[in-house]
Image (cartoon, rainbow, N blue to C red; front, side, top):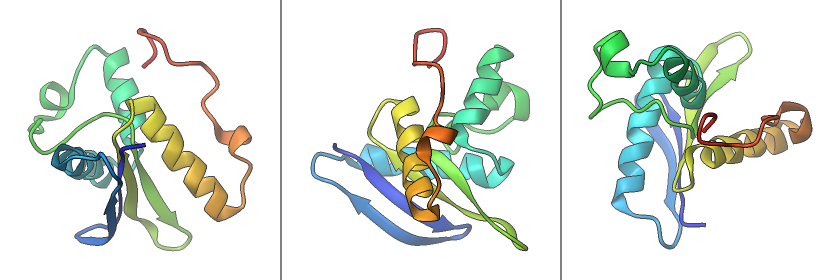
Length: 129
């Protein structure tokens, strides 16, 4: 897949790669999604779903510029026991739900957790992106 991937400790990029076919726009989406995680300490997908349920967006609800924040799936907080949320793992290049699922699957593999226990249950649809 043509995706870009970033691991960030807030304020410092620790890892970045853009696979064949990824574009500079993917890096921009990563920046905006990671900013959302840094601000709310929740996945960018969860923030987006909450806002859609309330028929709102980051600009209207929080006054955040859309040029710097994105409530779209693909960024997940990195929570360290005893330290709290210290950064994010972010993917861009797939549809947002798939970006989110790729991050969760990677974190599960790293932590030795069964992805099926944490996977999203409902398939994506126009009303449930």
